[in-house]
Image (cartoon, rainbow, N blue to C red; front, side):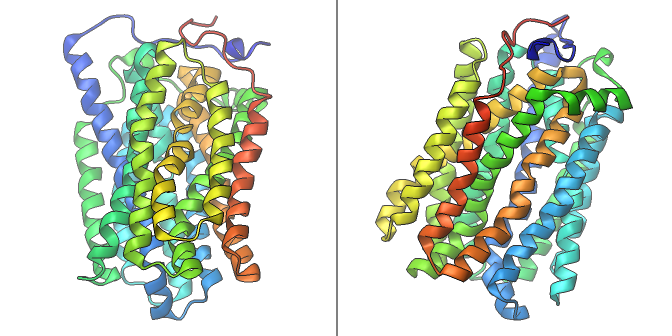
Length: 414
């Protein structure tokens, strides 16, 4: 069966309404804001980990375990959040998840032991896990195909800008306040955004988009060959992206003696490269009939190459020059992968399909922090750490060769 016909696609936008057409940008803005604060909450650890480790006397390898703890919860919640977005609606899932994340982020400020921090990171991951699937469901419901790639690209700039903001601001802020106060501020802001989302979000522009996920629907998604290969490809891609995001600062500080502020600025430049690239690649994809597969392969192979190049650099200036180019290829594949999921699975099951694939993608984020930490601790080699990171996007590119692209994402399948 062709990928485009594997699961029925229903396009919900039968009529145009000027007010709804305008309100969809408010929906996109709220989805963007929730995703942004969710990433700031999780990425802050990359900047505070050294300070927390010294305070709690935690060894280097255990710092990566905190990230793994977050993603253990996050992966589980991706599945639940995806199904829930189709069952109770993305508004309830997203607002509830972000508000709860704010509470646990605030509580993390009181961490005084490895066990307590590990437990709270798992809870933070469980709270944050519904964000991506719920947001993808909202975008699928509110944006027609001819503008969905661009909307997805704009939405996903939130993760890139969070890298920029976190690494440009947090190291400087930490010179003025403690890491515990920082988490209290972040938790409060996150709760406020969650409450605003509850008040302003709407599931869809019309009731016809509402759907209920059944066990047979879930089984069909897991039996979809292309969706499962896409999940493995995304696993490799996120292995490289978030492995770099969580370890780059510590590797540059420990491996080449850069200051925390300098390392944070370099990682921020990586995010700058991605901010313009994501909506641009989504827009181009919309213009040229939704071509996804080849651009993703090119991006992932380039990502692999840039990680290997980054691993042999030695000076601060070299890192600064390479960072924006690494940023483009490290993030720009994501709106195309997200679009392919909804096109292969169909809009009615967009939340569930996104939750399944995102959960499998984030397995890379669960494993890679510990893997890179062990490699670096064992070899003391900056380059070998980046070889470990580069293996992920290489795997992703190889898998993408076997994905059958939907013939025409503008055509409604029967």
